[in-house]
Amino acid sequence: MSDVVQHTTWEMVEGAMERLDAAMAGIDALDESARTKTLELKEALEDFYGATLRQIVRVLKVSPHGEPMREQLLMDPMVATAFSLRGLVQPTLAQEVVALLELVRPQLSLQGAEVVLASVDASRVKLRCSGSAAGCGAGGLQRELTELILSRIEGCDEVVFEEADSGAEIANHVADQAVALKRFVTIGLVSELPESRCVPVTVGTMSLILVKVEGKVSCFRNECAHQGRSLEGAQIEDCTLTCRWHGFRFDAHSGEGITIPGVDLEVVPLRIRDDRIQVASPW
Image (cartoon, rainbow, N blue to C red):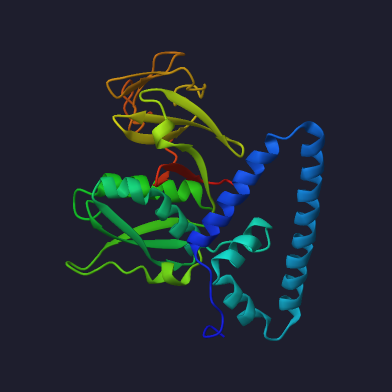
């Protein structure tokens, strides 16, 4: 079957999602009557295609050949995304770890670190690392990764690390087989982001803050690590972000606490595609 089927790619999925996002932005610009009718059409189409996908799932469940057919279908990124957005398939632990590692890969690269998924055994995740993520001086980075994975991914109870063979290319065999269900949302343009200012953005139910200092873009949850108040209106000077409420100071690049070390802002991983600033959608 794999010789006959031509699979889509994640780039095709992202392109389709960007078209949908652009169309939704256009709907917001319509007058109230036109917007109401357009949203009704959107809801009717979603109900129709949602019912179609659910029927496909039901047929696959009762068919004697349904499971291998389902696995073959989910190898296609477009199909996997459609099923995921309708809540008809849940990502595996391996898929969630792969997606999270991809999100933080730009930050790891800046630190000269490379981390990939080596294996998953029940609730135990093994990561293979090299560069600054390996060796006797990598304890801090490995602790941060462990805390991130345990806090973001349910079903993971333990994270262990192994070093890659010296000089060997790191091969993520699990990632090759795991369909990383993901959707990235563009939340701004680097060229339009003002320097040394906190710019609030909303993604789904998440309130975020974008910061560009010395050309580097960072994203944080819009909550001061002191008392959880909004960071809007915070002052940025010499790469130091100062909350306007009680004067708590943080590194504007990393979010690390300056007033009280260890009391840090929550970093939201992002990626830059051309000029676009993108984060993973929460839905």
